[in-house]
Length: 423
Image (cartoon, rainbow, N blue to C red; front, top):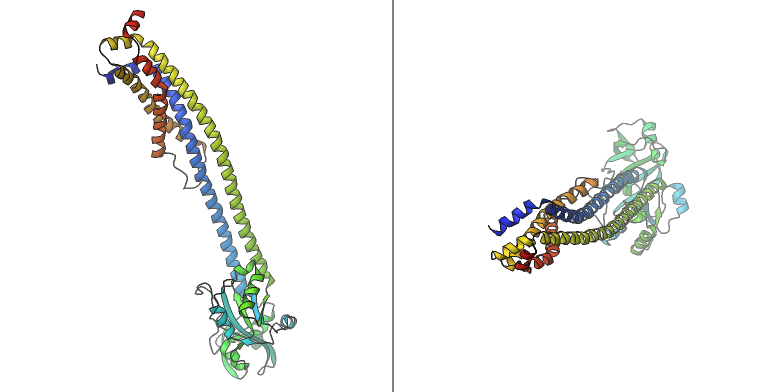
């Protein structure tokens, strides 16, 4: 009879002893596999929660940013660069500047690689008397080309007014009963109505917009502007003093003012949501990290305790098995089995317990841990892991071999004559 058959027959003969050893190993390995699986699941859950919070914050930021952009385009710009000698009281009261600066300032800003603002738009704005109608209107010379010192301005939408075209405020359009495509005479020149604005309830209702070059010609201000509008000043939203300092350093003969409080309210809301979102994500990360440390410490204590109990229990079962098989050992030695073969018989049984118990413990521990933890999203950690299975089997074999080694040595050292005589 071969040693392998002896081991199999002994296992089948003493099912209870083998089953108890198998159960203890499965419990120990199950605790280990379950604990590691819970830690991995916790990490996956943390990543998923943080990704969800980050995505939610980004979505809120996207909506608010679009709202801010629309508000800037419809209601005005939040940063306006004016000549240094412009009296702000008059500027606010008249809603246009009486002082001018070279249009070349725009190019100088563009070449300076300024980082606190993104888009710069020149504008010439002045209140004039419309000779043909005797009305007082505000003429605004604008352009569709923005100087962009930091990013690509291809997505920036400005209200372009081509040469020979004119855009009318609501009061002007209604008073003259004009429609798109009509031709009107403005300050001695003919223009085609390009667009008519809806009623805004502001001075814009009595404003006309034309091309910047034509406005400079009509007002005899060639090469001059009186405002530079800074559009999408994202860096300036939370740090206007930095913008002022940087611009006045490049253009010493200018000043920077904030305008459109309704836009700024949206900007402040944007910055607040961004800060609160980052703080919430950081708090969630800290809470999850603290929970992980607590759970890992508990798992270490639990697994260590169960491992010690398992080793002691398997060792006691092995000792009891050796005592019950004293006669069998004596007969085997009498038949010529050597000590290392006796050791091999007992260790083979221990290896069988470790191998089967390790696999069962891994499956049970991983399944229970994954069932206990609620999955979050599709990126949840998959509990079946080959590396963890190898670790579980290795630990199980280490437990059973270590616990059975000394009993196996004692069995191999028994004197067959003494064992048979006592029997």
